Amino acid sequence: MAVAIRLSRQGTKKRPFYRVVVTDSRSPRGGKFLENIGTFDPAKEIKDASLKIDHERLTYWRSTGATPSPTLIKLLKEQGKFEASTAAATK
Image (cartoon, one colour):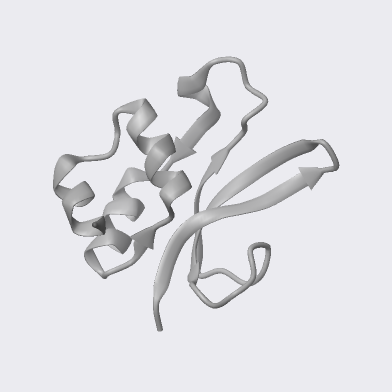
């Protein structure tokens, strides 16, 4: 089973809200997930407050072989919370 860390869309029409979830890569975007490890609210003005993630759980899932989505990598890099050692592992 290939495990992915990606965003799952929640919220209403034109008011998106995302959960950062660990899921099987074959499941649909809003489908079943293994664990919810954070949230992302693009409507917030402050970029640092828009992404909240449990870094211990992110590190654990990365160590087990889960791969983050390109969008999640971009969000983590914007906050400066994506380590260079994990960036090399995703390429």
